[in-house]
Amino acid sequence: MTQTTGGGAGTSSGGFGFQSIVGESPELRRALALARKLAEMRDPVLIVGATGTGKELFARGLHYAGPSAAEPFVAVNCAAIPEALLESELFGHEVGASAGAGPKRGLLELAGAGTLFLDEVAQLPPAVQPKLLRVLEDRRIRRLSGEAEIEVRCRIVTATNTVLEDEVERGSFREDLFHRLNVFRLELPRLRDRGADIELLARHFLARIVHDRGGEPRRLSPDAIEALHVHGWPGNVRELRNVLEQAVLRTEGPVIRAEHLIIQRRTSHPASQGAADSGCEIRIPAAGKTLLEVEEEMIAIAMRLSGQNQSAAARMLGISRATLLRKLERLGLRG
Image (cartoon, rainbow, N blue to C red; front, side):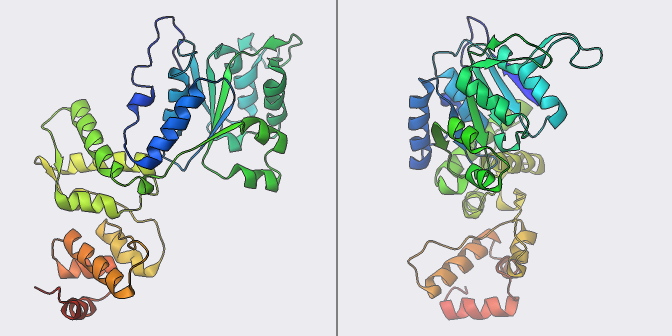
């Protein structure tokens, strides 16, 4: 629910700085370039990205690459703490705030001059939103059941995987708070848009997994790399790591092949069911190609992923084996 790191004079960024973010794609480089500039500031930052894109990793980078790296970094998942407890966790309480409770400093105090990171900020309860707004405006809080005003020194960084503007329109999130949090906006790319980073990350994770668990080094076969590239990665970097964790367990030898990758296609479209059953996803090739070229490319990919097994390729494509044979013959792909 909450996690605190740092807070000592000798604190180092260790594995938490931007250097721990793996990738070379233009999309990631743009996000990192902006993040490095924002790290030097103390203004609020709203990090926007789909689940698994590395929002907390970037939040830690903002902290450890900045002037307050030696101060605490406190991470809070707003969706993981019960609504009745979140206010007390953030603002603290005095004696008598609840039965048997003594004075307690909240996370806004514990963060000191460091960073308070509020993940899934869209889940912030309505009763807490105006109090957070006051923190951003006045830099002061009152503990629950307390009267004294306490200065807040931490930087506030938030993150969301939703369109916060939509929550404002629905009335579930205050517009004035949104504008206070959205002083600077850092948008993170999806894994599927990061091109060659997929293979780069896969090799990085494989090395990490083998190092943590012990055992012989693993490498990806060409068909496994192909399978990684054609998958859409709805769970982004987190999903990629999970897939490789499972693949290492399923593989006896040093080579991870496509059949070792458990990749789920998240769709209910009937024609895609075969691809889901096969454990691979086939994405439509880039625009600008004719229908015949698209069909040929998709069939070729399915045949590669299936190891030239026509029945398996047909299931991936959602067609019968007889239909696939006719198409292979027409396209001149039948060997």
